Image (cartoon, rainbow, N blue to C red; front, side, top):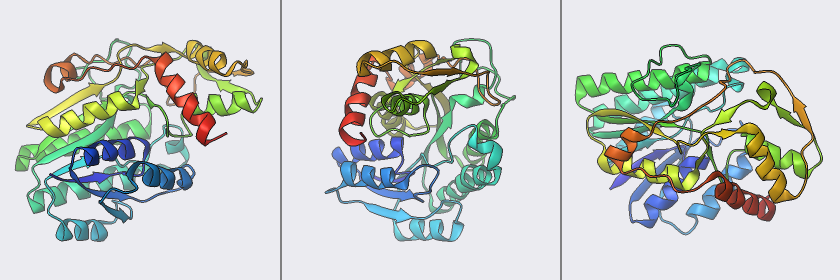
Length: 316
């Protein structure tokens, strides 16, 4: 298959591309290599994961409809794996336009071109953020998600609606994947586990929001990629799936694991709940298990051990 993969230099995108290339798929990758975090890390993912593989790489923003149309004109595309997005909840408060351009306009450009060029399968990244302040746990795909508490979450909910329109009007097969806190080696430096590690090693205080009462459903990168690839293999109709580990981890426990593995104590700066943050995420993965054969294997202890070994080797 020829798979168009957006966000190929991102954490999840680069890992997904590596697995797809390893099994012989043709990959056409797009990434704008923006500076939300250091683009050097994105370049290193490409060279480390994908160096030596034969694939196409386009460097532009998917909100650029002219350049995106050229990609479709130049390539026969069988499936789309749309992982590109402007990420981050708090960043959306000060940079809203970027989220509208990348997440809304970029996604619509892809859907319209998929329709125009007869691409039938469209798998895209949504987010656990769409659940907003939902107090019912675990979060189920049947829960109401009409009350997002950040612009980032609103754009992800919008992506689900956009995809449904193209499924309804044109028969495009669309699977939306609600990712739950993906972590691991080569991860995003803006994520808490990454920032905690950096600060603890360098004797800087860590900000512990919500008085340390947060819980997050941490999902190891290899488990997430397995779910994405299964979605690509089984995409039919319109469906939304939770992809998480379904075992929420308390923030204080997360910190304690990092402290133990580094043999160093954190200097904690306790802060209140931040705007846009939710106290807990917890995925009901029953549907993903049934339809995708999704079965996450890596515990938070094992996953953090893998991350820390990578961090000390490549970053310190």
